[in-house]
Length: 340
Image (cartoon, rainbow, N blue to C red; front, side, top):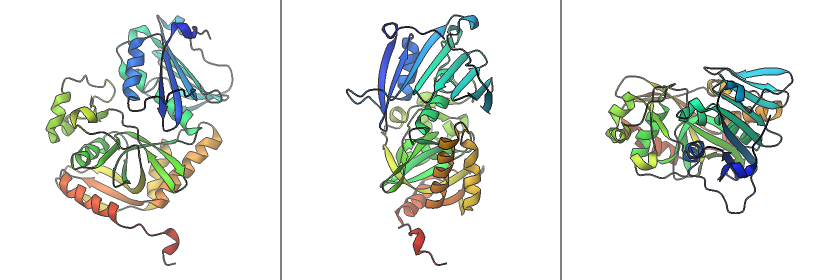
């Protein structure tokens, strides 16, 4: 593997919930794309990076500067193209030769090579060539990803886990319009504190479908946004479309698994906690054993410490906002106060 000197690279620094991040690239465009992803997390002055990402373009496949390391390979995830694998103690992704990523968790270092022909593909940069390594490095530092949208009232949070198409974004937009504080549309992070679990915000762009745009006329401002080539969704920034900021963290109180019903009226029903944990477990990438087990343990703690529900989502967002606001305001019983 070859490497350019630091003087050839542009650099931007961020501080994500206490983790200092350096992103360097030979491309102002790549740096701008990743700035948009981490725009809410400016660097703390004088902080030394805990983790670093270096991105460089390659003119063709033969010129990729990231190479597959030697060693035994164990596949941990297969995206639409290529695969993500652990090779010895490193994380390696080859995304159909469009991009290659090598993450060294021990050193907190990520190297990424992207073909110059992909210079207009923001999704490639921010998803396969960023998020897997970002999640892995944060997991090693006690910040555990959760595939969910998250909102809060008075510091108490409601989380909507789910896969693409489950209605996470629609719920986030609907409750945000009803005055809920916004933490994230697709991914947030969990971390332990002296008081228990905290939900940490990751307010990236909101991905939305044509159906969601029909429900919220404000999204018409984002009509010119190109569709994501993978999900066929468009994107919007909450702060621009809805004129809201975000709250950096909250305490999780409600865990609500949404499912689009096609009806106008929402139906909220209690959900078995074992089922809730079972639906969350597949989102943990089984990379290094110790940190992956800690990730699973945190998800189990989240389920145990929250009230869990199924939601058949309708379009009655004002009603649902009032219902959830009342539920968030209720005192939560201590686990040891329940009758045997």
